[in-house]
Picture 1: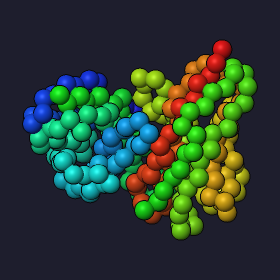
Picture 2 (picture 1 turned 90 degrees about the vertical axis):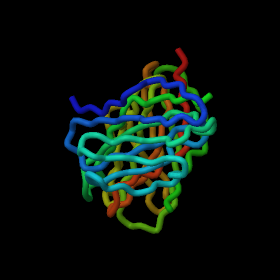
Picture 3 (picture 1 turned 135 degrees about the vertical axis):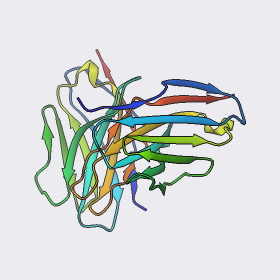
Picture 4 (picture 1 turned 60 degrees about the horizontal axis):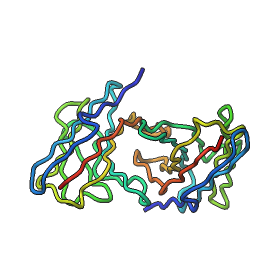
Length: 114
Length: 114
């Protein structure tokens, strides 16, 4: 059974804290993605990575950074959390290349910044 | 950038009835892929159905089928014999043939009424 796991389902942090969200996949996928999901806005891509140590900005990268030191792990970092980063964060992975590969999603982390 | 529009934020359907969720997209590409994803309450997002743009035949998966109108750039999802567990948020997504990034719509919240 394929799996994408995220380190926390719920997280509460204070403004200004450094926040790490971890994502691990066991499918040997090259691509990994971080989205945030907000009501009425759907899923918006923050960053994605197509290989170890490679990263590409998505549509809303401001205030975020990422790290991919190992193929199976992709971390999202909020350097200094702000209240407008309160959201649901979804990680996904997919195989590389043409062919319309589906993305597999993790359960999500609901982050609240106070 | 590609845009995906879901014009129905919320819908409801009686159990055992049929419902259609709409999705339109904007692209200049000729080859691409379209997806419908389902996100049940507090659960993981999963793939419902996938369509290759170069295939004229509409994809079907059990009670789920699509009406793909390439010229109109329309990709609607039909759910037949609706079940209570079909209650979920449904997202339409577009993927270019030459890329790995998904572009999501804003979602439609479907409630199946007993």
